[in-house]
Length: 345
Image (cartoon, rainbow, N blue to C red; front, side, top):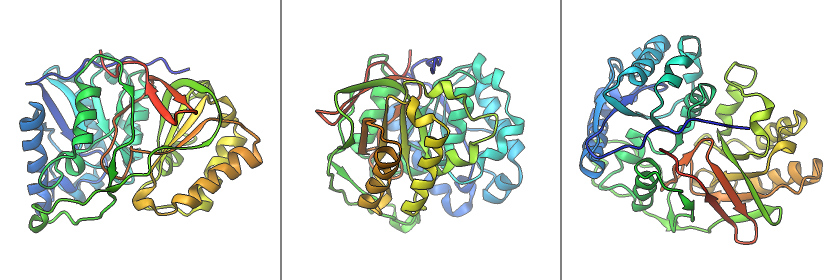
């Protein structure tokens, strides 16, 4: 069972660090404007001073060639007592390459907020291995630098999760959603994405209530961590609520079946208290994914596992902020997820 240290809450006036742990586009000349927009909004909307680590803005080519420098930035950000939180610039596809250069004792000795999603799943599992909770949520280039203004739902959940040491309570679905792909060009900076009405949560299986600690991430990235020292022992999944989502790569439904079948054959699914799924990117394969999940969970494994679908986290917007290791509860009758603890202390 997960037992993670909660990091101290953020406060108005805190300094936080931006890190490029995967794709280094934040430092590419054509995207620097976007990074600066996120930096400005963090100050104006949250009172947070965003600083760059030595390699954060060295560009995508340098960042790709130097995983050891990326890890060095992360370790320095955890070690620096003046830095109170760490925000991923954006995801990518190969931050698993940082693994040989990570000092887990450094993370454990300096618990602080780390937030990001997608390929940041790797960094979340680094924090988890160090025994520290982190947060599956917004990134600098994506949500904090959103054109015109941040979505209210995203902003509200960041404030509630990272700045308040109170139980998060019921996490209702966002009233609207968008998976619109709007190119990050300076010309588009005044174009706001259009929200569509959201369907709300769907119950795919289960009944009653299920309580457990949150663990999970982007399902494709989780595959890259299996059989590495980041992959937790099976006991970490005991009575847990596994949260999963797919990326903008929109894997075909057959891959969902392959991966879930692996979780089943390894015994992980039988250990869980429940499972929650984020809305598929742009709602591609929305119905097909549901069929694939039920095929494995109910038809093949004959589990009556509580499974909630279409939650507002992951690669669509706006988004929740999910704290790893926090105690949560699925209520099947109400199709709801409630986080019973604070994310921070």
